[in-house]
Length: 219
Image (cartoon, rainbow, N blue to C red; front, top):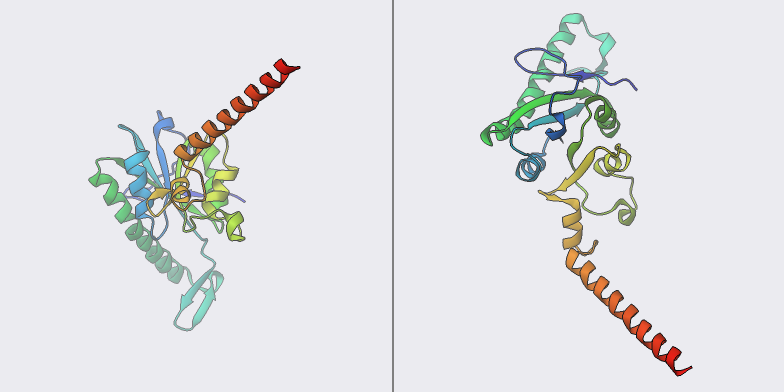
């Protein structure tokens, strides 16, 4: 699958190479409603001087809905196609504007990356080595493990599972890291629970060692 990276803004340009200091940049995958994901990134992942890249994946234009039904792209005239593409570009600009405004209000440098693909997760995975992304934040609508749900793997979990080792992927659900949500729901042990279990294991091992030593002494 080929990867097409499109930059939208006042000046048309393509972002395809890493920037100096890109190791500190934060890439945030955003869709229709990911304000909570971006807020988490701004509060927890952004460091002074870094740039936030908003990554938005949209499907290729194959069919268009018209008053007479859905028409294939090939059935439209060049003028009709141009008008529709302009409308779609404006719609995406308006969608991204709320995220851009949130970054500028937080005094954070922001840029946008648009990927045209039918598979969001795979498109993002392809982008990681191209731009040497080391810090990626992505949202999910499912706080539970896919194993517990018995459903297909969520996009965020798929990206985290298949991302290169050099890329840290954080999954956010309703403004919190998924791990924190799972701890609150009792699906993952908290650090205190882990410490308690560790102390119990240590105590048990010590008790067994003392008993063993006593038996050895009796022999």
